[in-house]
Length: 344
Ligand SMILES: [Zn+2]
Ligand SMILES: [Zn+2]
Image (cartoon, rainbow, N blue to C red; front, side, top):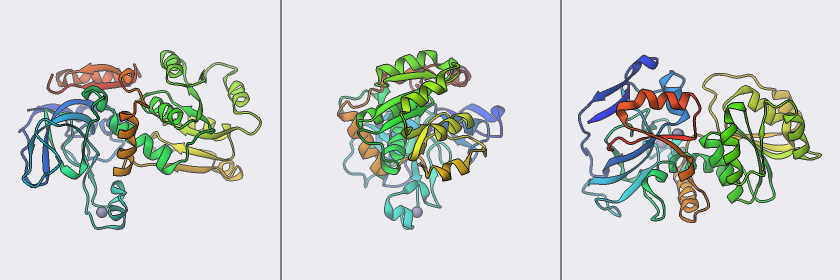
């Protein structure tokens, strides 16, 4: 089967290869035919060696598909079921983190698309405990965004406290920023989003998703306007989704004292920020590493109840053969989510 792998360092270490189709090796596994697999910021960090991987590995962790084969011990699922899965495919099951259900923190964790083979391929194998059925009202295309949605839920709801009446500023208007916007609005928050000149179209769409104002930070009066919007004290919550130093800096400045700073984006490198200002404002800095089973329960409920709109976030679709064009479109910051359609 065709698969896009990270086999070596750098961009030149990414390769489309014909590899053996995976087979079920234990009774708890499920074989999934991939329908769509989204390219994530993390995949870009993997391509440029800014995120640890177990090479050679098939990339891709945000996917949807249908079950084509079941291990003999798998109950609750049938051939043909439309499914998604969380990324922590390998965990010890015994440590304090596994027992709490915080699978991503298990020392033995291996994730789909970095530790074990992922979804930029025609098929993949996943343990049944990681698999979830897709709500009936959600298409297979849309379901490919359930993993990033679960990550946003982890940051905003499980680790952060975005609730109604919170005045929120979101910095970064890519797919994660738009999901953070929708989850915040679904929870009753009042949200302003911030992007740059290259986000002109994205800033317009943010209003459709419920942002009451969308600001281009490169406009000369932008920061002043944001301070005005934050009111006399500043914003209650700032969500950093861009993974840029300047965006983090603005977030710290715009927050009120004792506000909450939620880190969603990865920077891909060590960064500098004003820790003293964070301290003097008693800002709580929280984050989240991918998602846990509880995050998926919340994310799938949001989808089922139509509290989030995922289809508008799908901007590009590519065959695996056109992987270079797909990566380029992500690099240029076009649209929101680019999907691979490995079996199309
Ligand atoms: Zn992702
Ligand atoms: Zn463990």
